[in-house]
Length: 108
Length: 108
Image (cartoon, rainbow over all chains, first blue to last red; front, side, top):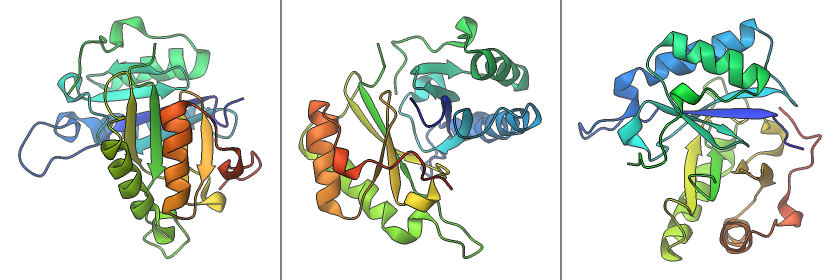
């Protein structure tokens, strides 16, 4: 059994050289909103959900991105309503949000 | 199929308030060494291994810690030789390094 039932990692990478990075596209806001929603819904904790900061997840072309493990489902999100949907459907109910899935060919 | 066959996240959290955190116990060195070994062994890339920075993984009592997904196997390591073993056995060959596993009851 997984220590956290679902563990979501948000890329918060900020490139210093001016190249594009998730941090320039609302990643911190997405992370903060996810963390707040999970808290409001009391979904967090051992055996439940963990919302985590991460460095570069190396799929920058689809940024901002997040990945949910252990399912290894990758998402690209735009705004808070996307995050709400990931929280309500995937993190809470275990249903993948197909419309937000990052296509497999999207890499760095 | 998982975008990365194995995705290891190192807690690099540094607490500003003086409380204990992985960063005070060699986490950055563990991460750097892992990254370098994976590069030397050419294990990295899509469909293969990704070594990732992470914020607090919330299992501070066992720090420094790292977690390998999608298997959801958690490790506590001490030095570079521990990292070498995780790289050679788990990341390369898919064998869990039992002696370094973080016991389930170890939390924050």
